[in-house]
Length: 283
Image (cartoon, rainbow, N blue to C red; front, side):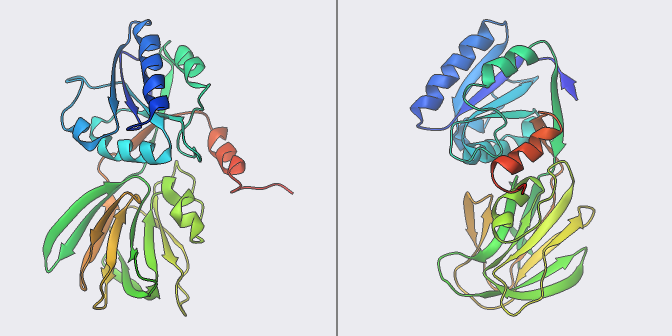
């Protein structure tokens, strides 16, 4: 999809002087090119209203690290605008541009050549005794596991209503292909190209179990059930929000009805990221 830039929302990492200064620089550049621009900090309360009214922004620029990018994308998914990140953090796997690359990229794409691609996001419900007690979205992953105590928990896994496994482990990760390079990769899960639409299911340190990482179609729902009376079990959303779970709780995960749109940097960009971060190597 290609679009013409008329309105741009710039979101900066909260409390970061460098991000704030860069936000002002980006805003001045865009304003000088007759683009309407708004700058805000990455705070949940800043997203309660559609800041631009209707129509919304044509592009959302995120100035910060991967954590900022994920948090902004999750909270602003409803705007259905493409995201482009400028990396001011350490890893920069999700952010497409570096500190020096934003101006040349904008200058080129102000001509109306901005292309975007769709990436899968997750929606989930926590069901307790037949009632939904928590719902949310995730860009990277939904994790069910024991966080504070170094003890195993028994978790059941189902797909499409069919029970597939019961495993004792530190946790189970259900990730998007985008998130397969994050916690899932650290736990030994597969690398799945971000343009695909599938669940990536990985057990964290399974004990005496043959459970292998799974890649499953998104046409059905995944479910993770806490199968034993335990304390300290929680759901973690993108590693940024935690919700305590009880024995018998079921976390139902499905494809979000809204996809994540990101600026398209070309077919080679994904593999370049893998190589630059050591996830692909050449002998």
